Image (cartoon, rainbow, N blue to C red):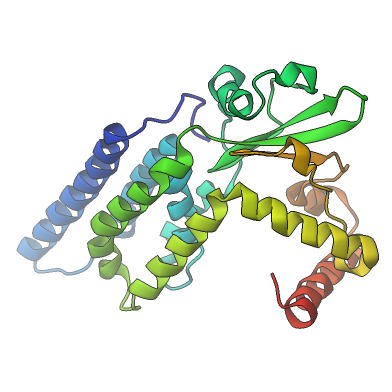
Length: 276
């Protein structure tokens, strides 16, 4: 979904978020006024869907914190009508990665002469709201994966959050009577963690060592800390299959077994190790 244009930064992001909020607000106000004149109440489902589509188009283009906020909101049960949740679910799918020349500066900032350390494929194998992943090789020939954070994401993420919280809170109040402040606070904490690649490498190392000692805790790619840095995570390549392909392509008995094992891993991490 979306496109691979570089997301806007600074004031441009605020303008797009404000423009999105203005369009949604104007649409809902016009519909409510028309209903009032007709003597009816409520907002028609097609109006909610139209405005949910407006939201995902803007958030997908902005990527970064704005898109991440949309993803997290879409996971909150009871916050939106089911038809809106279905539309917002698009934000959970893969998005178009940035062209390599737009994200290469992140790698070069950490390793000015990275070509002397590793090679990297220019086409990303996966992209999400905060960054994208490329395959590569060390000079030894060992296969690796390189996770690169979108330029400027860490700097813009808190301003994105503040703008979206201010502009969207009144609209969310139309959907639900749920107390919104705890939800916003959890989203804020999660955004901070998502952009902290140093912390992510630390946790990845812990999970890797745990899985190495006991395969029941799952197998996690080993991070190569000597190649990691600000906005860059380098790990050993570990063959895998995407969950959506697993569901489509494998027998139900095998899918059930994997689901059971995944549940056991999650419970063991939470109850035995105190982490998720």
